[in-house]
Image 1 (cartoon, rainbow, N blue to C red):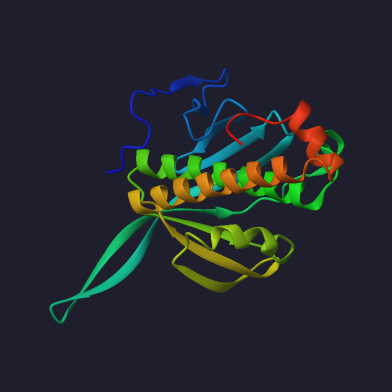
Image 2: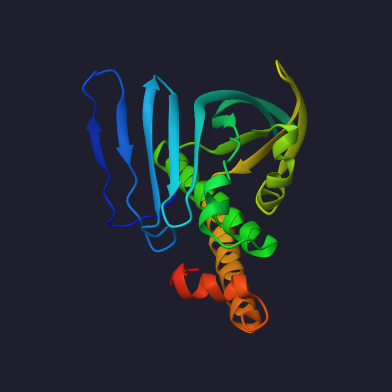
Length: 221
């Protein structure tokens, strides 16, 4: 089993209705205090996650379900059927309006901040999978969100077109294991390094970079 956040206990609290459980995920070195995340257990194996980057005003919610998917494997010439635990849901549309009001407009700047938000969401979902002993994470992207899917391409191992009530969508499969988490961490480190380097190098000719570095830049990104 993964051991991703040593010495980081979570505070579990139950709301006044007694029907939902709400759990808050504390920050660690990879997801600093600028990201607030929590989830509610709506019913058995059904959860709603909320994410909010308080520094850049990015927010979204995603509903995910724990399922046991049937799998067929072959070993030594014999087929073996078994069930594999999977966390599955639709990737949400992220409202960028408040980001555009807070952060000076620049295509590169906005794209990198949104990518970073996506990666931090993925990290929290991997941590949840670890806690629930879930082997795989599947996310479904509608056509409007296919551009967002590209950042996840570094980590998923399968992609398929699926027909839903709202039309054809793209489903990706991401292994929820230590290797994926390590790849995610390394990718985030490289992204942050390149981002800082580009901001400092071009701030003299780009007023948006200069303003961001002066008022909004965080040590971790």
